[in-house]
Image (cartoon, rainbow over all chains, first blue to last red):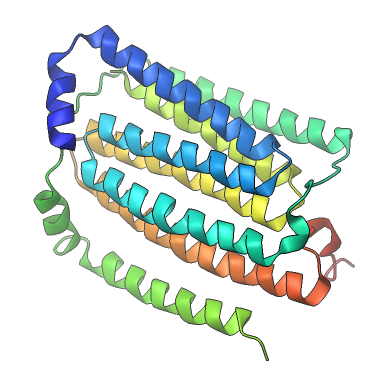
Length: 176
Length: 99
């Protein structure tokens, strides 16, 4: 289905695709700002869903449909549920979050804006008008072939890491 | 489409995440800001993979997703343990190691 969507993109006018992209990007940035500013923890988790869905749409724009589907399954399906469970189990944090000093807030904003300025300058300087073309979606076969041949060692390392994280989480959170 | 529009969007998300990590005191909200940062990195990986027409970008984005899932699991376990021991997940109160 996503393949059909992408085939549709390549035939539609460029400005239609670009303005669709712009709307998605604006929604993502607004939602990300809400994640870091809202006082309610549950609202922050729900705004995070919007950002994660937007990232999945970006992956579709780039033609990486398997990554987009994994993003939705793992992040929106599992990580957000984990966050909501965490909020539920630490009930003290349900209400208003914090009273951060304005000074600290201002310093953090300065750090963020300076970082953004440096990165934006570097990006515009090095990739001024490099065009990117997603010619059709990457097939899942290509991705899996590459994982199980060229990247087999990192893949095994990730599976061991997941096992270690699972055991570690149980050991840390166990009641005794 | 330009490569830069994806990279700049990722940079904006990354900086918002950094702001969140610095300004939040609630442990759960800091973890959510870390998720923003990891997602920004994923957009970059996939964008460069598409630019060079190499599947490696997508593969490493998948690895990042797996590592992020492990990170959330451990992070939430630590936050829960902190809540159980101190009845609070205010990170500014966690200063036992302060000299």
